[in-house]
Amino acid sequence: MEKSSKRNLKPLILAVVIVVVVSSVLLTFFVVNFSGIGVNQSSGVFTMKRESHARGSWIFSARSAQGYSTIFCDLSQEDLNKLSIDSRIAEGEMLLILSQGELSHSIDLSDGKMDLNAEDMGVDMFNPGRISMQLKFNNAKDLSVHITWH
Image 1: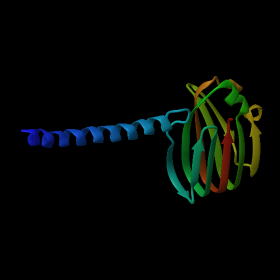
Image 2 (image 1 turned 60 degrees about the vertical axis):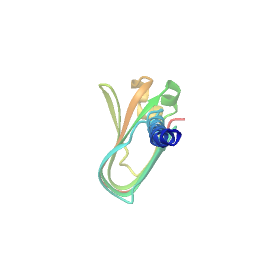
Image 3 (image 1 turned 90 degrees about the vertical axis):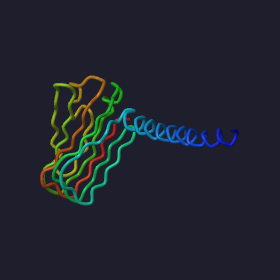
Image 4 (image 1 turned 180 degrees about the vertical axis):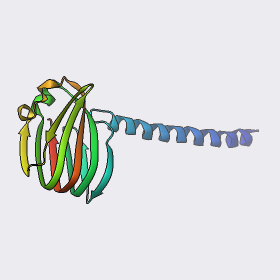
């Protein structure tokens, strides 16, 4: 009878281990994706695209881009005050669209090399909280954008 109960425990132990591993993976996914920087959304055709985002910055570059890429950030007033952009583009159109609720503000980054701070961008229209940052590209070539807020 003792051997039978040990055999019955093995599937139970295996099930517990699987539940713990899956729960850990899901928890890590939600912590990474919803702790200040939201899930990235993009659509379009990109050549040699590189993109990274961490707490306090978003870096995007591509040889060519047609489409958009969006991130969602939770920004404090201090973050809004420190918002800055360093961008360059060889040709085509590149826009940064900042949105919060019904508010939306478009910044044209199509003019070669640009360095803008929060005042230049007019971000005083936004309140601390969740903000969408979307880069839109129309036949953009040799571009890079570095957005920081820390």
